[in-house]
Image (cartoon, rainbow, N blue to C red; front, side, top):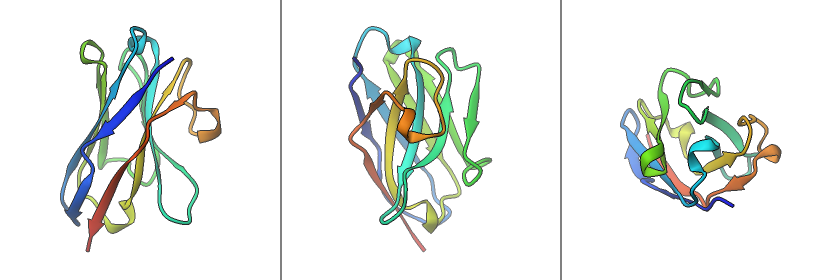
Length: 123
């Protein structure tokens, strides 16, 4: 069982940056693949990025490639999402995700979810 708590969301102007954090409970955090998804009002939950347990592999959704970076600190049981060059279309609730195997880009396959943190980008 893994419990996830996101933080770091807020209001930012277009072109700005934010860093989201996700603190995980549980002794087996380092064995989980971790990821971030987002959901805007009236839209489906969308894959943002993921990182393997060893940090050797990262991958991103097309809409955030080159702007967002995912990283993790297994000693601190924390995963991060650095978001740069933010756009109004990045406005959404951002969810941290954990998976016992590899992180799928399909949200229906995720094992654990956080409660979400709101990111709002003003134009």
